[in-house]
Length: 369
Image 1 (tube, rainbow, N blue to C red):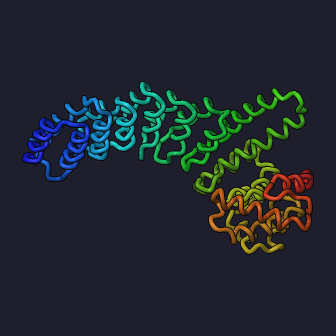
Image 2 (image 1 turned 90 degrees about the vertical axis):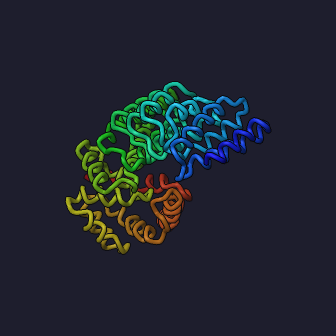
Image 3 (image 1 turned 120 degrees about the vertical axis):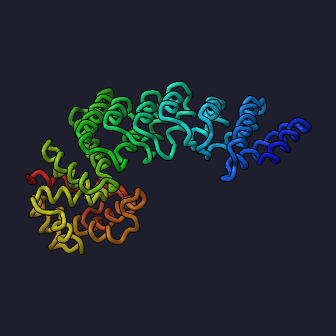
């Protein structure tokens, strides 16, 4: 590398155009990243990098950041100088470089604008302290990026801050409850906070009666509960959530019906097993083949009205026929097919709208204990 470095320095002196400087940076960072680089050569390259960090051409500094972003041997002071540069230079380093300490990333989160915070939030891994700093300092967009990053560690305390600050943001709340690591013990508080926020917004609509407001809030509670019960959650978490809802009196027949009609069958089976006092495996076996008798037996055991059995049987058959049923696309397909399968009995169902099917079945739930 020594010969190449000397040649590059000579070239910079004799042909110091921006284009030559950019090419020089690219070549030098390639050599710097090579496994055979010697300590003396590395120190010489670093000295050149420190000079080029002050280059007036942004593209030269950007080439420097792009060339160094994947090298864990970059000196910390050099990396931090690049991280505080303009966005074109800083963002590649902040997104990819492993050089930064948590404290340095926290400093960036607290002192730099949104684009810098976004780069930190998108890192392959984000520690809990850095996540907390991003939630404290970042706006809604930054927090959405963070909570959608499953490589980010978010503590219960930070999750509570997200709930407190962004209870009005559907994108934030939906994203955080769909995290594989979302703790079910926060579910009750999340549902309460979001429901109160929804009630306040609905309360401003003076044309809505209290009864309508209550129904809409209840529907919102059920929807967010099923988001918390997303299939990415481990079964043990789902069972914990269902147990918690039952203890709090929230494991209602209408919630169980909504889970069935919207394709959240893992939640449906877990909740039905809880109501029936049997293992979920027994519930799954009853309806696995979509047989009417099995569906009727499930409804009897779980104290659900016999009228729901037809939908249970239809849902079980459809679930097995849909590719990736737990994806958003798969769930949409399930809901569409379920509506059509129930249309002979309820001709005025609205295509693709499970709420219309829920409304047809809800009156039968009044007798469910």
